[in-house]
Length: 86
Image 1 (tube, helix red, strand yellow):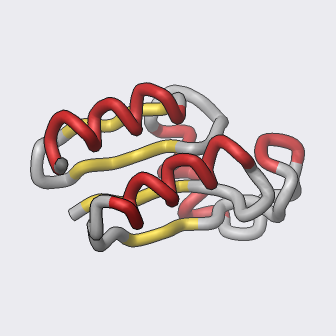
Image 2 (cartoon, one colour):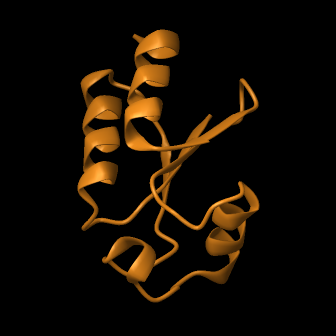
């Protein structure tokens, strides 16, 4: 299962969502903050704690539970999706 921690107003998150849609991949989306990315207020403490458990307080953050992979940075995520799901 893929989980994407993101913010609706973030262009980097939009890039990852577009790639997931282009590839027809189902995923679970988490919005730990209000729009505004790292500067938005935390709206969900549980998902925010999961986000920062990966080591950073930034979005997008992808969790691939099947492959036990986690990553930040939209370009790295898009490359990973192309490599493993295209």
